[in-house]
Length: 251
Ligand code: G
Ligand code: G
Ligand code: MN
Ligand code: NA
Image (cartoon, rainbow, N blue to C red; front, side):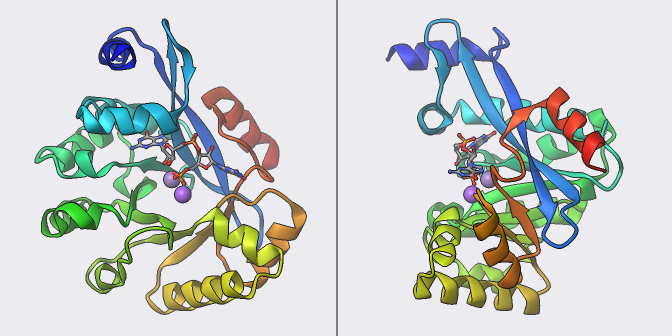
C-alpha cells in the first residue's frame, strides 16, 4: 500500500508533530494538563487523519517506534511547562505489550528530566482483550515509576471492571458520546456518568469528561461531579507554542 510506504519513511523525514489539547479543572477551570495528539503531514498524502494512520501503524507495528517518538517529544515539551501541569500520552496495545515499553518510558523521562508523576499514559479497555496479564504487568511497571495511567474512551469498549479492581488507574475518561447524551437529557447517559463518577470517587480515581463543546455540556458534567473537563469549549488540539501561550494567558 502506498500509504504504508510513506508511513515507513515518516519518522526519518520528520513528518510527525504533536498537538496539545488542554484539560481543565472542572471547578476552577485552571489548566491541569494537556493531551498530546499525533499529527502526520505526509509529503505524498498531505495531512492524514490519525483515525487512518494510527490503525495502519498498529497493524504494521510501526506504532512502536512512532510511539517512542511521541513519548520523547511529549515529555520534552512538558518539561518546559510549570511544574503542576501534566502531559497525557495515548498508548496503543501493540506498544504497551512490547517488552521494552517501560524502558522507553524511563528513557523519555530521563532524557527530558520530567518527573514521572507529570506523565499520564492513556490506554483503552481494548488492551485487556489480547494479553490481559502482560498488559497489566506493563501498566504496573509504569505505575511503579510514578506515572499516572488513565482509562480512555471509558464505557465504549470491552468492559474492564475487573481491571479496575486490580489496577490503580489515576483517571477515567468518560467518552464524549455519554457527555452529549447527558447534556440532551438522555436518562441512560446521565445514569451511566453518575455511576462512573461514583465508582471512580470511591476508588480514588479522577474523572475527565471528554469532548465538551459548549456551555450546556460543561454545566452538565460539572453537576454530575466530573473532576476534569476536556473539549473544544476550552481549546482544540493545537501546536506546542499555542498551547504554551494559552496556558500563560489563562493563569
Ligand atoms: O486527535 P484525534 O481526535 O484526531 O485522534 C484520533 C485518534 O487517534 C484518537 O483515538 C487518539 O487517541 C488517537 N491518537 C492520537 N495521537 C495518538 C498517539 O500519539 N498514539 C496513539 N496510539 N494514538 C493516538
Ligand atoms: O480517543 P481519544 O480520546 O484519545 O481521542 C481524542 C480525540 O477527540 C482527538 O482526536 C480530539 O481531536 C477529539 N476531540 C477533542 N475534543 C473534542 C470535542 O470537543 N469534540 C469532538 N467532537 N472531538 C474532540
Ligand atoms: Mn486520549
Ligand atoms: Na477518549
